[in-house]
Length: 304
Image (cartoon, rainbow, N blue to C red; front, side, top):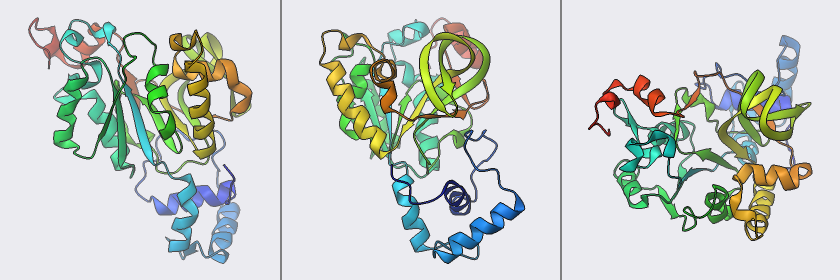
């Protein structure tokens, strides 16, 4: 994306435009660390450009932030959720409740709290059960993935490939514990990850501030959390390339992000946002984990 603001101007303008944002979520590595002198200089620059009056963002300032605004969240919700059997025999994993609240609702509510109104759910397994979301979110958009039973999750991004600009792409079965992981404005494309000395899970290695590779297992890496954000240029590129990969003989076997990074890593500049293990977003990988979070699942007949 062509930047019309410097990074300090962007960060300070976002701070002034979203005064109730929870800054406790760890910042991106490139986020500005303001000294008093830099803050004063940046305030002066924003004032001179007509983007603020005092500490109030003007209409011109709001317009300057528009190209950086997240416009939608795409939730990949088509999978079978085999790791939460037996609950997912009767309910798709994203609709599983923890203490009375569906996993997918923790994501939608966090996105709405960040001012992101367009929610797209790509459904497959027991797809009709997602209709229940319309009761609470009447404007939600449900897209059917006809390939979910024969392809990996690249199929869910494939059917939403024209919607990836200025969009979050998010696993729909996460438990969002800290809503501030979703942001209204983004300087650039980024992925959420947990900094790790060692990981045996899917992880990213870095080249400076930019993702250099993705693999299973690594040292001095970021353990992958299924929350990515694509700016406009990245989203357009990713949508086109996802369609191309999916059309290949082997294309259906890939995870969506691994496909892009395997074949097109040089095309992307994607930074990392730090995520605190178990505190910001939680991935529930086993039935036992589910039971620890909600003891009612230990009853043989309880399905939420």
